[in-house]
Length: 200
Image (cartoon, rainbow, N blue to C red; front, side):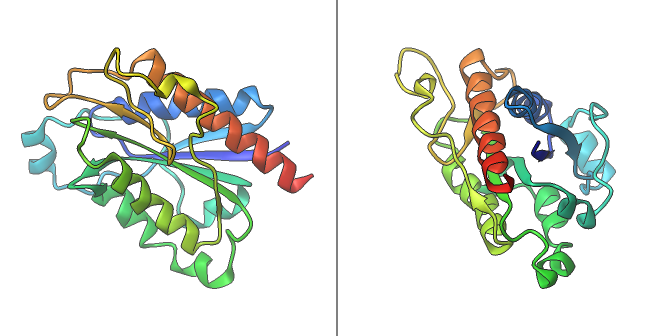
């Protein structure tokens, strides 16, 4: 049985919902799954002014050493100017020790994100996450077109071959749709299945 970590940061709850869907998909493939979030690093006055929603839905990750105990790591962060949020970047900046040991080499990874608009940097944000995972030696699994729900223009949809996504709207009013959540479930399942094959 593969052991999977879904690690995320969420300012307004969108990524928390996507993380739960990713975890659901991984569990459907028989994986043991933990969902953890990274700490808030923005100053309290910034958090208050921006109206961030406090997130207590999952525990904060214990630290970078915890990553080494998983077979797969799926990382979700919202976009900030076309790259992952500073909260998630700050966490990965603490992983030098496990990088030096090669502790994550050979594991499976993936990324998911949320943006305010359809062209708000989803793919560049995914790549900013994936770059970190590649430097640690993870094998990346995206949201392949086996998930047909990401195609079509009859409604606003997230989705990218590089990872599951959702679109929040500028005021955060759009919540992840079933198509977005199904994409997250699909990716979580594919990553768990891949990890299970590699540890078999």
